[in-house]
Length: 294
Image (cartoon, rainbow, N blue to C red):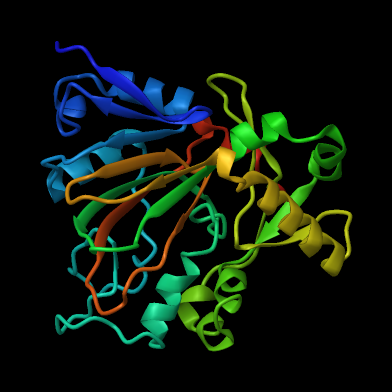
């Protein structure tokens, strides 16, 4: 088998992987190698891949169950489609800047981990560039594992051992109250997770926060919000961040247990489409130790 070349994306986390097409890792029996890189580096980049929907689904399935947020909305016999992060409407036009669809995209400009609001959150996101813009539209990653390792002990003591509550509508309300009231953001009740996720493979800890977080055990509402903002500001300092400018065919894979992400703005009259598959965390990924009663 060809050797892999590993190039750091940031001195503290993330690597670009080359030497074997991403679509071949599962088919050639080398998924364990990919999974080991994922556990060690938290974020993986594969540039300019020939990576179709079938390969996307195959790889996601190797990580675990594929997340399906719209199962209850589909009609009988209607097939699952890979979710798209896109400003292109069904008629082929781009959404207007103040359209609710666009406002929802703008909520992705907030630092977050996907699906902290679901009964079982995501392990990973596998994001594939299908249509890119001439300017803007980067995806940025921030390592909460690296940030936690460097966080002053006084700040760590404020959050370690505490639970954090999350709700989907919370992040949308930061963009638009109208958006936050839509049924799709209120389907699930609030969740409560431990603040620190320990990787069961290597024992490394990461702070588990998101734009969906709104309350911290042991603090009043306002106090908790201020603490969450302080923690988010610390974790998203430039030294903990990798910013990726997309080219068609690029694939980013990251560990939702240890990495925050956000999109950056682009000219809204330019189409942009990324295919996104999240997989659901399993007991073997440490989810059992994260659960707290609500």
